[in-house]
Length: 202
Image (cartoon, rainbow, N blue to C red; front, top):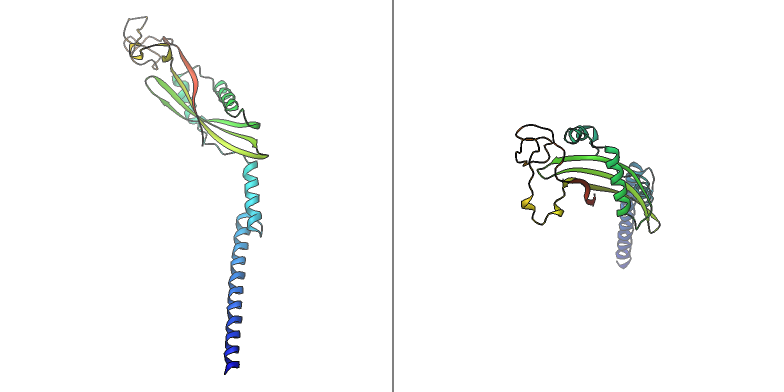
């Protein structure tokens, strides 16, 4: 009776080992199939390393809307020079990344444009790379590029006012480019500047 009990126990152990081995084999096969499909390699770990390496070498994609947004900007600002603006962004990004090694700016695009009463905001985006701790990093940044009244010169912003030099009418919206009363074209009465107001890693 004892021998039969031992045989049953041994058979049970063998069946359990076979079941576990079969399950492990199936899992490994599924992992290899997934790795081949996702990364083109049998090793999932090698696949992740390869994917990480490719990400380090590939510049971040940008959501450029230049063709749509630029004509709208040019309508409000006929003298707007997109190349000068993008070079300005490149310069500001280089300053922002001045503590990094081997900085390279790949591309700068226009994403959006909003016009407000006292400022106009162009959202621009840039991709860049640099070396950090011997590892190449690929990054993407959003910029708020603002054309605004130079309010900092005035102690009390509420006292800022302007009048049309042609008819004397009060100018309430400096972004129009013309007098609201007589329609005369006007140069900026109060100093404005294009400046980078915000830089955000996206």
